[in-house]
Each structure stands twice: as structure tokens, then as C-alpha cells.
Figure 1 (cartoon, rainbow, N blue to C red):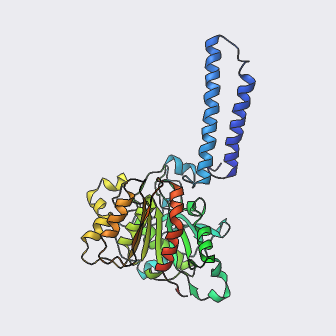
Figure 2: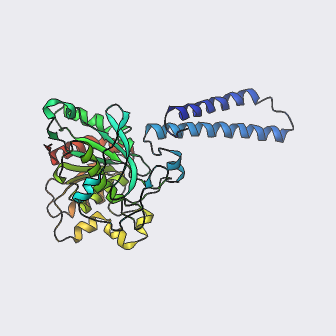
Figure 3: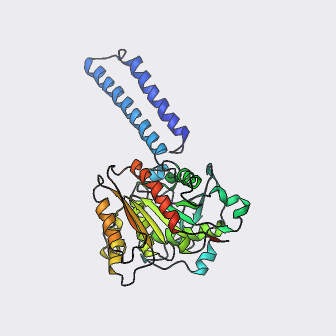
Length: 371
């Protein structure tokens, strides 16, 4: 039975009901000496509490993410992400995909995840990662007057733990963008969310190309754009592409834009950070330095043509100083900016508060093209 969805949640509800009824029926009917009766009552109490906690955790996972999409995701057996041919690279940085790599991107079969959102599993032609891909197309995509429009794209990254569909669940990014388009504050954009967390159990793979292992940066910055361009009328150049994430996904968005300016022109980091904190990255000093967007920008003699929106909350320690440092190191910031919230911790509610301004800003940075 799937970890997410109604059936398993219904089982947890039934378990709670069973525990409560069992306590009511058995409490005064337990035979034996006093010690045995007390022990049995303690057991019934603990069972009922465990059942209630399980029900709440399943509800939170389903309604606020999901944070874990499968049992393998939860227990760390890498059930949702595979390497189909081994990791082929060891570099943490790299240019945009070559034409030959782009040509290898496959035509995919999509099914409906939820209203307006499509889903599939895809294999990255360069990274060889097999991961999930979710795509939302704006209503204009299928309108005759837009038949020859190549739409700008925003790639969306969750936190850790987290799943790509969280952007169309709890975050409701597509509903927010549609509202902003109706108000004339944002233009039509394709929203794409792909697997970020490669290891199960909520372990952070650091959004980096790990030597001999997952080439996460290549998957997100090269393969996902190429797969989207192959299957949809997505605008072709970095001027038409942006990336946005929250928490670990925010760090990743900034890092990938600095590393791959030929893939993304704009990035939004919501409550992100600058120094990588995934242990699999920080154990290697060179990998750590190569994946710190602040240090990379500071060291580059000629910084890339990118714009960044870094957001943080004064009640979320470190997020505002890191945001200011990242934007402050840009020698030609252009329309880059810092967004500061006075209140709010490191929560989904805070990320949702940041979302409208972030989408409006992104819409101003990336342009549409011709199909």
C-alpha cells in the first residue's frame, strides 16, 4: 500500500478508532493480578497514542508535501531514484548541455497528476538519473493565438526532505501564478518540478555532482531543461529560463544558476543559504568550495549574466544575512534584490508568503520566444 494517498490514511484513521474502542471495551475487563492489569492498560494507552501520532504524521505528509513519496523514500532504500547507467561525470560544474546531449532527450509519455499538472518518470541523458518530472502548462499554451509561442520556464525545487509535487500541493504555485496572470501581474510561464533528493530517508544529496555517484547538478541544470524542451514548446535559451526553490531547494536554485548560467538566467532562493550543509558534500573541501555560490561569485573575475532574488525572514536565523551577502557580492546586480520578511520561521507558510512577489519578479526577468 502506498505511503501517500487516501487508502493508507484511511487505514490509520481506522487504527485510531480501533484503539479507542478497544480501550473503552477492555479497560475494566482485563483479568489477572493488579500488575498485569496495569501493564495491559499502559499498553493500550501507548498503542492508542502511537496510532494517533501515526495518523497525524500521515496527514501532515499528505497535505504539506508530501515530504516522503514512498516507503523507500522514508526508509532510505533509494526506491524513487535510480542510476540507469552509472554516474558518468565527476565535475561539480559545467557548461550548458551539448547539442548531441540535447538530441538524446527522449519523448516522454505524461499522465495526469492533478488538474492541469502532468507527471512522468524520465532518464537524464547525461546524468543517467531516473527521476520524477511534474509539468504545469499555463492555459494559454493550448490557445490558438499562442500556437507559435515558446513559453518561458521556471524550474521549481523543494526542500529536504521534500518531493517535487509539493510545489503543486502545499505551495500551490500553479494556482498562485494563474491568479497573478489574471491580475495582469505575471505572464504565462511553464512550471516544472523535478526530483531533487536522490537519497531516501530525507538525506540531502547536496544538489551537487558527486564523484562516482548521483550527478544531481547535471540532472537539474542540463537534463531537465532538455527533456522539457524536447516535449513542450519551451523557450530555448537561458534568457527564458529561471529556477526557484525553498530551504535546501533555495540554496540549490542559487547554486545552479551561478554554476550554469547557460541554463538559467534568474533564480529565487527562499530562505536558502550559501554554504552547502549536506554531509556528503562538506566532507570534501574542494566540493564544498565549488558549491558555495557566494564564494564562487566572489572569486570569479567575470561574473555570469544572471539575476538573483534572495529572500529570508528576520526570525529565521541566517537567512537574511546570507541573502544580503549573496546579492552584495554581485558586481553588476541589475534587477537582483533581497526580500526580507519581519516575521516567520523556516516554514511552508513563510515560503508561501514569499511566493507571489517571487513569481512577479521572475516574470519580469525571463521572456517568451518563438516556437
